[in-house]
Image (cartoon, rainbow, N blue to C red):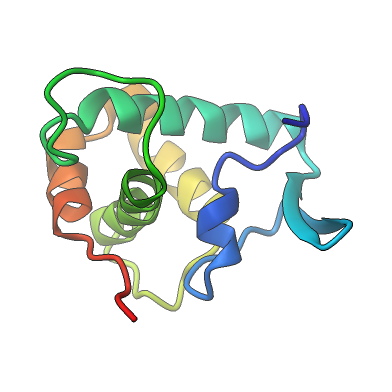
Length: 131
């Protein structure tokens, strides 16, 4: 995996979320989302790590595992972003991941201070689209 890959790549590839710091790159027929701001990427990596550490119950995992299935990954990241939207009382139309994280950091000073139980409630309620 490239060093500049977006930690929220799968969420950005949905129509529900975007990121001002991301860029779409095609390698063959594969669409990749890369981050153009390495400082912002580091913050996103930290947020994903904290979400994973707090999501055992929300994802119904018996123990912590660093590797998640596609469905678990989508639930964690999309639900986590929706949790940030709810935390900030933002509508679903305000879906820029970078802007949401910046707003959360201005309110809570650090990602470790976030109320993860409240965010995990949204993660556990998140439903994947069914065909």
